Image (cartoon, rainbow over all chains, first blue to last red; front, top):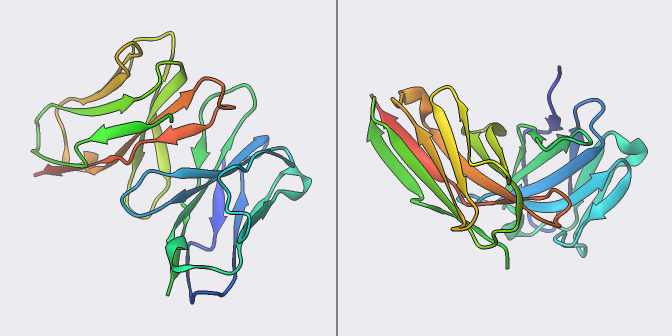
Length: 113
Length: 113
């Protein structure tokens, strides 16, 4: 069974530029999560999707972050414009309905200069 | 505020030693608790999941316990090996949270050969 795929794996940008991350969840997993993990901290939930609908985006900085999950499969997370404090690893996870285990992708490491 | 705390932030032990990692949480109304392993540059791997009705779970050399009344969980690793070196994260699904994980900041374990 293929795992959660994310791309790119690494990205370096300058502040005020824009960036987008892509996630392909495990096939059949209806729930998809985006997390932000700052160095030395645990992951923090940014947004949760159920199929193509948003369940919770209360911790997403909506003035600069946006996310979508068209057709309820792949998802993209965008930052525009980026700030220095956005430097972090962005993790995508998916979960099958009726189960408790989340499966995580390898993450995208973003560095904002 | 629902929070998860892990102490210590880092731990070094000689190979072969048995060790315990600690996790505490602020609200005893939980749905489940999970322990994850994170290797550098990689995503999170689920190690053990304890439902709120359970007291412990075991997998190989790993044993996780849960005491909801005191808001504590421990991860016991027997006969540690250098390959166990990684960051261990505790995550709680609090009741009413739409199965969202709240993570601690992790314990970075180094097992010395």
